[in-house]
Image (cartoon, rainbow, N blue to C red; front, side, top):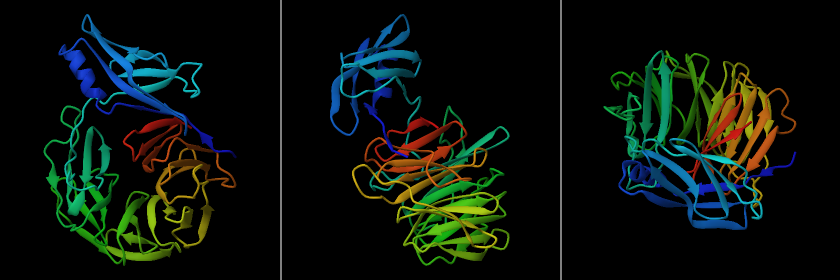
Length: 357
C-alpha cells in the first residue's frame, strides 16, 4: 500500500490573540500569516487570512489570492488553495483555541515537554499533568478554568514521561525517568504504591482491563506487568529492543512501540508474540523510532506514530498490510488518539491535526 503524502497547512500560532483583538474591538481588521506545502515547494504568505469585525461579528476572508477562505463558526474557518497553485490543498478546517495557558508542572526554562491526561467519571472531569524534575499535578477540569487548584503529587525525582487515569477517575498512574512508576490519589495527591524493578528510565504505561493490573515500558527494553494491589511485578516481557517508547493494552494483549521502528504485541497470560508490525519509513528516508500508539478496540484498529512524522493504521485482525499510511512533514508525532471515525495527531511542531480514518 502506498503512503499518502498530504498537503500541510500551518497558521500563525498567535491567531487566537488576533481573534480576541478583533472581537473585542481593539482593532477592526487584522491579518495572520499562513503556510501551505507538500514537501516542496512551500507557499508562505504574510497575510493569508484577514479577520474583520462588523456588527459584533468577526468574518474570515482570504488576504492573498493563493488562498480561498470562508468562515464556518465563531472559532474556526476553512482554507483551500487556488486551483492554479502547485499545492493542491482542499478545504481544510482550522480551529482556533478558545483558551490558552501554561500547564501546571511545565518548566519554561527546560526544553522538556509536559504530559497531560484527562479522565472522566460521571459528571466529574479531572486532569493530570507532569513536567520536568518530577513535578506532577492533578485537579478538577472545567472549561472556565482548565487548570485551576492543582494538587501536587510528590515522589518522583526526574522528568515525568507519562500519566494515565484509572477507570475510576480517582487514581492516576505515572512513569518517570527516575526508573519508577507511581500510583497517586487524584483526590489528595497521596502515593499508596510505588512500582520499582526496571533497570532504565520508564517512558510509558497502560492499563489491563479495569486496572487491577498495569504495564510499564522502559529504556531497558522490557515491559513489566504489575499487580496493583500487591505492588509487585508479576512478569517481564523482553521486547528485544533498546527502548520501549509507547504502550497500549486490552484485557489480555499489550502492544509496544519500539525505538527500532517496530511494534510488538504480546499475550500477557502466555508472553507469546501475538503480532509484529513494521510500519513504513519516512519519504525523506529512514524508518524512524515509533514514539506513539493508539488503540481502538471497537474497530479493532491500531495506529502508530513515528519520530519522522509517519502515521500508519492497521486492522488487528489482519496486519499483513496497513489500512492507511500518511505523512505531512518531518515533525514527529508525540501523541495519538483513535476512535472509530477519526485520529487525532499531536505533532512536535505544535500543530495537531485530525485525520478521517
